[in-house]
Length: 138
Image 1 (cartoon, rainbow, N blue to C red):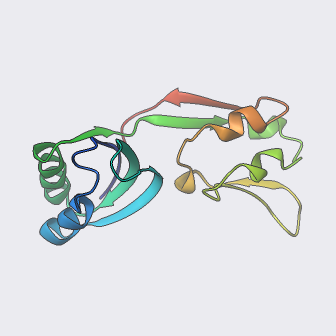
Image 2: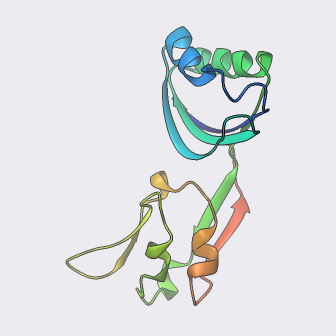
């Protein structure tokens, strides 16, 4: 089972190896989708946890007990692909690789599984074809 979470670390917690602790303790995989962490400052991670439902529950409980604010990642990117003119403006800001140009057809491809819902494409699209909504917890 895979679920995405937003983890917020206080300055006191950011230097501790909490993510590696949950990997070892609960036998889960952690895919870091987005990160903003600096030593001595508060930090934030968007992660996708992969493991059994029980392991994910225990991982979240462990994180919370150790001072990490852990909430389901519920934002979704909505893309009106039918109106897209395949200009590629959004691909220049998409660091996750969710928006790419197909090298054969030169059409824009959107890979939702890679999207971290950072919102950069919302501003980059000249036709304003992207919006961010609150979706269901993944």
